[in-house]
Amino acid sequence: MKKLIVANWKMTPLTASEAEKTFLETERAAGKMRKIDVAVCPPFVWLPVLNEIKRSRKKVALGSQDVFWENSSAGGSFTGEISPHMLKNLGVKYVIIGHSERRKHLGETDEMINKKIKAALRSGLKTILCVGEKERDASAEYLKFVKKEIVDGLTGVFRKNLKDLIIAYEPIWAISSTPRAKEDTPEDFFRMSIFIRRVLFSVFGKSAPEAVPILYGGSVDAENVSGFLKEGKADGVLVGRSSFKAETFVPLLKNTI
Ligand code: PGA
Image (cartoon, rainbow, N blue to C red; front, side, top):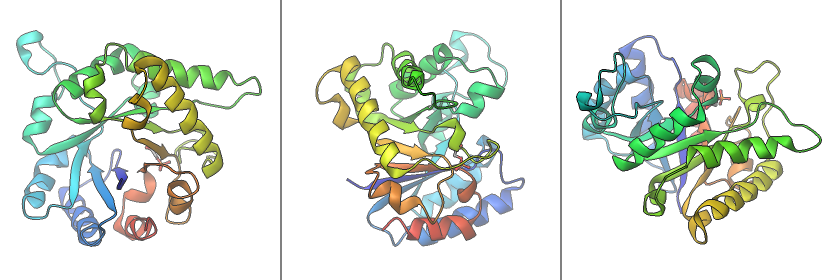
């Protein structure tokens, strides 16, 4: 299976022209790489202009960093929100849901995340559920925390929709915006991915665990990416800071193969 490399641009760049430039440079580099799929998730406002570029260049898919749980205003009025249908109309294929920065700064709860996951899957979006603990503790409470994020996030999800589900394990202590962040090790990620597959088995039964790709995220860069993909056996990576600029993202892409 191809490895999936997802760029989470967070709240960058500041202008459309910078977004176009980084996207084009990413597209140029990724276009030659047969063994990976690449998705760029810019802020919503840059999706239309990047979708225009994407019409003629097919390699890099578009994703968004969030989505709302209602598809139209038939279900009520929701000032400021963006629906799954709107995203699909803009050529969006992937959506990141439940990122720890949204959980922390915007008060996203497992219940809200669950509604978003179900709406995104219903619309046929490739849906990336982000999970990960704030810190490690000797009595392994963090495993219970991650399990709860998965179980609550996926409540009511149908087995038939698992083909569009992706889980990103992003320990908060490893995300570059956390003070003194340090990436996880490939060995530890591998153990966590087995744990996550066990949780999926407990929720959905057999064959579910293999159906869902598990990505690693948290301070991934050009130096450590191949460790997570090879020794860590990650199905892909979710990259924040190192994806903001082509100067750091292109070398990272090159080191995936
Ligand atoms: P980082 O971010 O690569 O900058 O640590 C990852 C993420 O927040 O998705």
